Amino acid sequence: MSKRFLSALFFCVILAGCVTKPVYNVTNQTFSYSNSNVTLDDVAEAIMQAGEVRGWVMEKRSSNKIAASLYIRTHVSMVDITFTETEFSIEYVDSKNLKYKNGNIHTNYNRWIRNLEHDIRINLSRLARQN
Image (cartoon, rainbow, N blue to C red; front, side, top):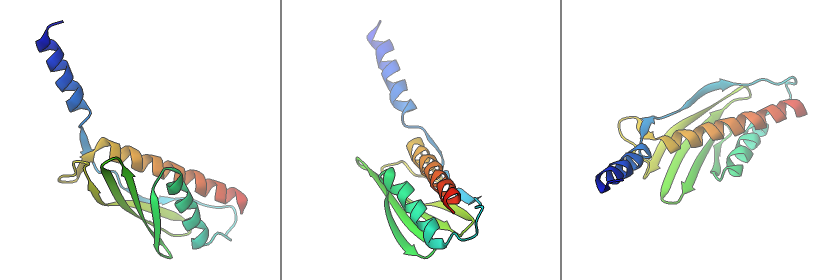
């Protein structure tokens, strides 16, 4: 293989890893329970546990709001998670070293948010079965 081909291939790989996409926010995702004894504190605990398992630093700001930050190498993601007894949202707040510009961000951010959303849903599902 020629040096020119290898150089071109290298730059394509680098560029492919730097793709940005629109910021993924989770808006008013609903969940339900078979029992109405679930409290805001129960939901907050389920959300906080889901984040902590993935390495998010979770800080309860009010009875229905959690600030979450994820630190991976030099990358930082910050979101607000708001919730009621029946729904939750995850909203972008800020980031560092994730190429945020004009509503677009590095694709890793969206993957991290989808993973967090998935784990929150799992914990809320477990909560529903417990009550």
